[in-house]
Length: 171
Image (tube, rainbow, N blue to C red):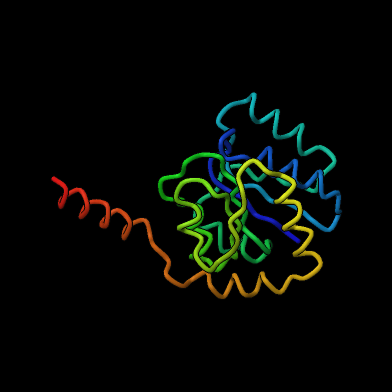
């Protein structure tokens, strides 16, 4: 099971909790590819320390044009954020290239995932590990979620227009 995660590697994005889930799982059949840059050197060190002994690759800076190739490598996009996300750009990016997506229950992420995957509690590495174990035992949900990735996809442009319309009505 190959996992993909990307975006700003900040503490609130919960990559440390994702690494803890992988450590709890202790299954060499699970790997993580992370794209993005840490917000600071201290967090970068924390991530490297937490990833020690796990099958984790940090690829650094990325562009949205890199994501279709990542879709060829990874089975599931994972965004366990603890932040109260206002849109969830990474989820829209993932769904746009056909990724099944697992997200946390914070902010707009549950609204953005749609039929593309499950919503799990933030900051609960044990439940994330359980999801990965279940997918190792039965990967069929991945295909179902991937099939739902393009349905009802809200793009950032459409979201911005909807917000502007709402503000225009309110004011």
